[in-house]
Figure (tube, rainbow, N blue to C red):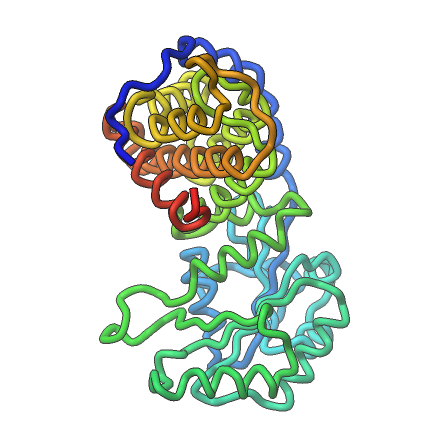
Amino acid sequence: MSTDEPAPQLPDLKSQVMTQVAERWELAASEARASLDKTLAVAFLGSASSGKDAAIKALFGLDFGQVDPIPGSTDRARVAPVDPDHHLLVINAPGFGDLRSEVAERAEEVLDALDLAVYVVNCDGGATIDERRDLDRIRQLGRPTLVCLNKIDLIRPEDRPTFIRSTIVQLGVPEHMVIVTAFDPMPALSQTPIGVPKVISWIHKKLSDSGKALLFAKNLRNKSAACEPAIRDAAQRAAVAGAIPIPGADATAVMAIQVSMITELATIFDRQMDQELILFVIAEALAGSSRGFVGWAVKALKTAGWIPGGQAMTLATSALGATVASATTYGIGKAAVAFLQRDGKITGAELRDVFDAEAHQYRQQVHPSH
């Protein structure tokens, strides 16, 4: 469908966005600050050869051997802060039994407050009875536990599917708990760690309910990968809201989600995002009302009878409404990341190009029928 035909004339976009951003920005900023005041404890368990240190470095850019542990840690089970304020604590231990028996004092308190465990298994060595026992103990705590089948690059590609299936059976864990990784792969196979975005997404989802996902994301090494789960989560919530974030539509619920999303993305990049910057990102992304994704959305809604006579109206939740809301939110999120990556040195036209490309791609991936 061509996107070059004139779209219906709609009320001034900037004034609408300005009003809604002003109403929601302070609340979004307050929620972000509250999230960063929480404490998060993540344990990395596994044998000395499994790649725990590599996992910590791939995720947080932290050389664990050079970080001073907090009092109460031992040589075998260590607890160290990722951030200067000690809000994110990482536990590095051979196994759950070692951790429970050796960690004392302050570190024992950290263990009791454990939020999530990442169990790293060396693919090259296969799963052992001790690893199965460790995993059973951890799961009894009721904490979210991710199993990383690490060093997959050492297994021949044709053997990997069989190996993965058999290892999952040996460990006695469901597939949704397992991600295949290579945190420090052979350079000939990959210049970057394998599986890290999936690990980030898995952890983000598990921490969302406790409000600690933002604290985790802010301390990640790969800022772009850290933002992706937050953007997709916002897009999914926008779809549920069902409002249509285009000029003239009643976008109250979706706008709140978008303002909160951009505030979170700025927090991940450790940048203060004020109302004017949020206004710029949203208004510029949606400014091309006669072309690109917004042009497509307006014409699709008009064809569906939702914009009679060219006048926008409040829209009820529907499949098309969800498509427009979610894809628009995703596109705005990716445009905000481009803005932050370039430290604000991006033109409105460049920002709209990012928005259009990402919104269209998301629509085609998630809602191919629309």
